[in-house]
Length: 165
Image 1 (cartoon, rainbow, N blue to C red):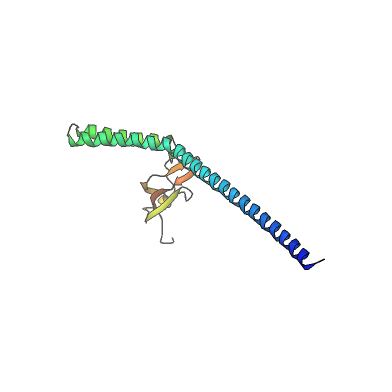
Image 2: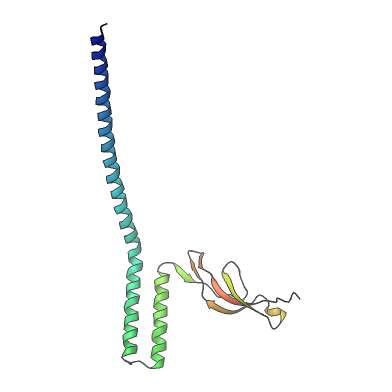
């Protein structure tokens, strides 16, 4: 075989490899465009999913906002007696609890004896007698559950004998 023939064969092989590389590069560019389009579609789906999931809660909060504005305007106009203010304020609390209820968030039942699973001790005071040890003296913040799980522990003051008797 002559040198010219070998060079021609090598050129043909290099040209064939070059063509394969160009085709592979085009396939990768096409694949990257497809992935980019898919990621963009997934991002839009995620944003829409989050929006649709949050929308009912946000609409409930906007209704509560409207009630707060009504209450504030009534106070500014001084149209309410103290009894009406108290009743109106209780109505706002009840309305807010209803918003939570629609999200399966419920206030915890009060407990007389300290329960570390549902309560967090904020302050300890000495008991007047041994029968008061570990009893709840005061609830500072109400606890809430969601779907049978503690969402927020109840913050309490308890009686505790710290003398070691």
